[in-house]
Amino acid sequence: MNESVNADGTVILVADDPRNNRSPVEGSVRPGRFRGEGPDHQEPCNRLSKGFGFVDMNDGGDNAIVTLNGSGRSLLRLLLVGVFVVWFLLLALNGETPPPDSLSAFLQKQLDFTRADMDALDQGQVITRLPKTPETREVAAFAIMQLNVPADFFLKSVQDIVNFKKSNNVLQIGKFSDPPRPEDLSSLTLDASEIETIRRCRVAKCDLKLSATMIERFRNEVNWSAPDYQARASALMREILFDHVRTYLKSGNAALGEYSDRPYKLNLADEFRSLVEPAAYMYRYKPELRHFLLDFPNSRPEHGESFIYWSKEKFGLKPVVSVTHIAVQRLSRSAYSDVVIASKGIYANHYFDASLGLTAFVHDGDSEESQTYLIYINRSKADALRGVFGGLKRSLISSSLKDGAKKNMEIIKQKLESDFELAKATH
Image 1 (tube, rainbow, N blue to C red):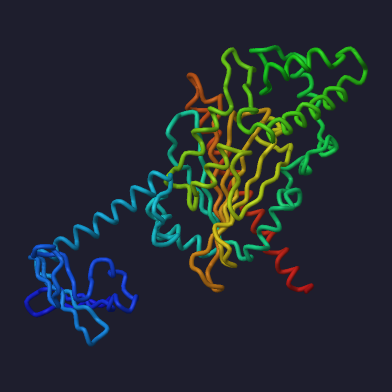
Image 2: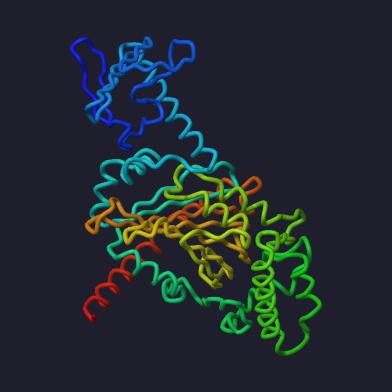
């Protein structure tokens, strides 16, 4: 359809003749007939005028000419605005915001990136932000950098999670088989101080995040008088985590249970639910991924896969033993498809009650020459943020998250780009 403007200001739209099945308006312009005056409201005519303009049908040509006067132009604008509003509302109901024009537009609008930030990003630096959160118990971190590797290479690296996360901060790590096997956890051990903490644990009074069932199992199944009680405690922790993963794979979030280390209980499914709600800074976060995070195992991401791993990592004053469910989603089948990876915390023995990580490998364009970026987002809830000193603790935890995100991104960039150059050189 082409558009031109007459000297009198009327708009002329030239559309392909619907008789040739080439026009998107074939349902509203019918050659030789229109709905108007007459006994049966179907009178043959080659020119229609209904107050908004007229239609000329040229029986010998391929085009229909639609001429709009002022009222017609106003109606057309109103219809176009209406279509846009309906489209916007449908996206909002699906939990998806309309995409910005570009990655840079998103960064400037949603995260207040300045020209200096964009220049630093172009120079290879990691840029971080601490987005605002809807409640005081939640903390969030955002980081972005250029990553000059192909999407397929990045995905293959993530699938090898043990090597992907290898750093001085990761003390122990392992990936669960499909289906999980007890030996998947064979290298996990607990520090002596952690074991002594477990030894003192009681329901509603424990310095580790454990359910009431877990606490009672440690009390009843470990012979704390035996000379090898530390080895027995580590073995029971491995058994507990193995059972936890198997139950989660069958029942999803309902199996996350409750932490009973404090006088009040925390339902982990409820804690996690608010973290998956869309936020303005969650770039390329799609409704399908949200459904997966909430409805697993009854929902799976399209063009995606998932796996579970465990790790023991340095964080703050205590090492954190955690279990994480990874969901990988390619947003299309294109070779230049963006990739979003969700990291769903299903257990952690310290600090965090619930956590969600989003890692997005994105192209700022749709060609082989497009610059590629890695975005990392973390949303976590920490029970320690309650109370009088919650503000101070929040500042410390947020600072740790921000620094940790920056360091991890720098490690990933150095590792993946050097590995990719090595792979090119050897092929």
